[in-house]
Image 1: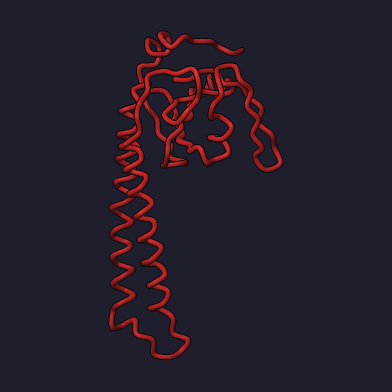
Image 2: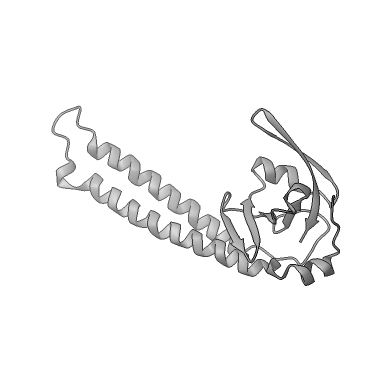
Length: 174
C-alpha cells in the first residue's frame, strides 16, 4: 500500500532529510578516495620512472605498465576532483514535486526497507545510512537516475535490469 506524505509531514517525520549532512558524508568519502588515489598515482609514477624499472629486454614491460597505471590513477584523481567540485556546487532545493538533481526519492517497494535514492551529479553507487534510512546515490546518467528524473509522486517507473523488469511507483520526493 502506497503511503502519501505531504512535504511538511516528510520534514516532521524524517528529520534525516538534511541534504547538507548527506552531501557532507559523500564529500568525506570522495575526499578520502581522492587521497588514496593521489598516493597510488604518486607510487605508480615513481615505479614508472625508477632506475630499477628500465627495460632489460624488449619483453620487459614493467616501466610501461607502471606508466599506464600512473596515467589511469591520474585520470581517476581528476574524476574525483570533478565529482567533489560538482557536489560542492550543487544547489540544495527544499522539497520539490518533480524529481531532479538533488532530490531524495523513495519507491513504493522501498518504504518498508527505508531505502532512498539521492540523485546527484557524481558519486554514483555510494551508499550510506542516516538514522534508520539507507541511501544510495545515483546519477542522471545511470539507468535508475534516467528512470527517476522528471517523475512525480505516484508516477510509474520501469527499469530493465538484465533479464528482469522493475516496475514501481514513486512514493516520496524530498
